[in-house]
Length: 419
Image (cartoon, rainbow, N blue to C red; front, side, top):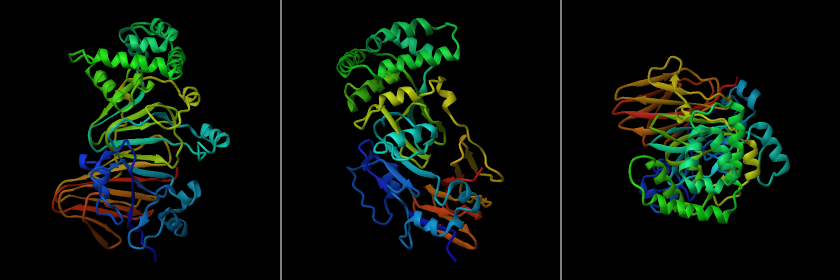
């Protein structure tokens, strides 16, 4: 009989934007001690992948079998309902991200657009699936998420001449329509945002770089608390991406801040960019990303400016509040409005334990904090958790108990149940 709960080994990905090992990357910290991992304090450790994605599939610790192939051979671990609805593979990918500098200005296509992009450009968009994402902060985190209210953008156009210069004729048009106190419909807002953002993203590189240089020089002379965050962010983005048009997104997109345990859900066709911090991230299994700024990678500006919903809201509306999870006492649920995944956060004080009824689908569980002796028990067997970053697969319908016997413990668990 195959095991229903087992430890898996997960791969660490090194990208330029990742935190260096010596700077406390959560990715290198969690991966350190796992088989085959070699720590280098000068290396950027960006992502820890937990799942079956072919680019970096997890393996079973004891047998070294590929998790994807193992699940194909043992579909009962996924559960009948999940297999019937999603097929014989995990529909989600669970990650840890450690962000040192901004990721690209980007959005993910919905299923219909993903299928179209895959059919037309399979060399760029490598699958026909959508890629909704959710991020839960492990450390203080900041990111771009969705458009600012148009009145805020209009105010920046008025007070940031370099921004207005890049927008050209679109600047005066936008400012006149959306000045503070103007009465406009939601459709007017969307049309205005699309016109403005398209003008920004299609501006010529030379004039953009010239205006960025002027902006950085002017802001360096300014002091005071008003717009201090924007000043500092412009300087940081220009240091990492000199002269890039994405720097002006500081005045277009919400700057969202999360404290540990807070979450944002990034729907399809919404602009965003992670800026700084360590997070747990869960997403539908896909590689589809449409980029248009702050990146050396391919930029697909026509697709991005066409696909966005152009809805706008304040930063507070980007936060996804957790709720209680079934009969548990120490666990909260982050449940975004999609069917591929949800995430649980369990926080135990010393001598506390959490008993989970079986979930009607597979899950992946990672321990992110261990303050003493911690155990994971299921089906009469108990495993001692030795280090932060240990990852376990839990089969469908299996009851598990987490116990903190010598200090606190924190665990995140991504799972899916068929609708």
